[in-house]
Image (cartoon, rainbow, N blue to C red):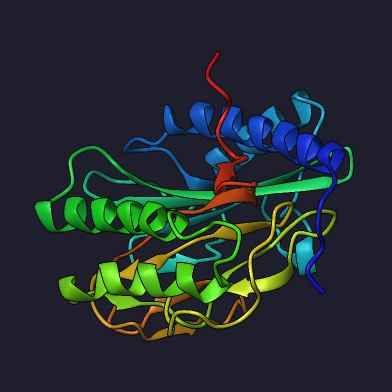
Length: 252
């Protein structure tokens, strides 16, 4: 069952999203060659706690980190490690969540590490653009799959692989709620969008094949062909006229 959030719940989720965005802005300044993913994880955990929130991911189904730090061919759920040190030309996705006063926020961004080649620049650009193309369909009366179809239709001409095993999701008191929000599919299917619904939209787009596999740690998910993957995600609420992003600080 898809929960409709009250105004108070939406405001708490907006506050959680603001903490997440502040953390994201802090972290991106540290994404540079020579930095370990463990260091980024520690920075995030300490900063989130300093703002009165809790990292959503730490201990979630046993996940050991406060952030997912997914480098190059890692699609999602990269475990932070002292041994994984960023180098020039890498890309890294920082995917993380916060809990504030009982409500979750969740978002992901893929960053270049120093200078990256043109193929990777384009992958990041198209993946981020596909998120906003999908969000343009997030409005009352549309179906969840209208978002999914818009993302797929935008990405397909570029020949990239669209990950199917992992999807966007509802969010609120739980990190993962209904509905699922795939990044592919036919339009005009699934639940109808209504004001007060809150969920995450998160295209995961691969430079090569769409096929992925989970490694022996049961978390780290990589592309089968070991080509890089990009991932952008925002948490939104459906409004009376469209959508509002809850994981961006409101500009005064």
